[in-house]
Image (cartoon, one colour):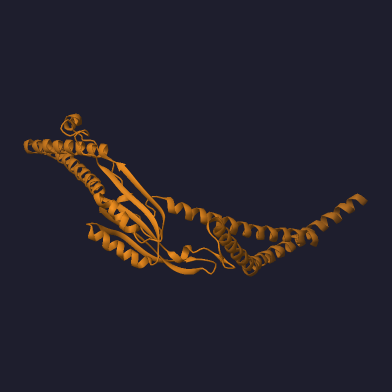
Length: 327
């Protein structure tokens, strides 16, 4: 009876140990994949809040209750006569010697060319086998669109390395024209409703017209807000910058030989795996194994009690069966 129990306990312990090691191995690889992906996501700013302009989305349009023709409103304002409305944004990551100082310089540069700082964040990150701390920063600025190239050049100036740079353009001319047309139609409906309101004599008619007028005026404010959003997004380009400390990208040195590229990553992964493996063994010995023992003790006691009751009730039945056979 003891041998099956020992086999079951040994198998459970082996399963827990192997599971812990697999979790650490896959956790390391997934962590690296997530870090690489975060560098490539447009608008991603680690440690900081996302840009409000980048997340803003135009609200749903509400059709006017009056039978006014929007096509007539579009005749005087078409996409052909409208200047192209293009939103230009950029995000990049650069390696610098002092992230804190560079963040202040970028903020001053943005203000000097007519822009402003949307958000900034300074924090510490761990690197290397000893998990040393280093400063890191993210900052998002808005600059006049015609000066985005100058701003990017100033940001990359004196940088140790540019990890990545991404620029995006979004032509919103059609959407802008549609907003203008809808706004003109809503304003025409508002004017007509005001005329109806002045002419209405019955209380019910006044109330009905007033309710429609309130809805139209609410729609007009929404459309004006969306138009303002596009105007500001086109006029001011958003630039998100991640500032990485130079010491965090230093290659691993083994016996005076500095490893670069894939070799550097492989050695660092080996070091990280060794550390995770050692921590897993310590965690298994000090937490998982004692916890398993604490859980196994009451289960084993329950098993003994259940077996005792089983034998107690089974024994009389066996005796009765034997007596019946003798008869």
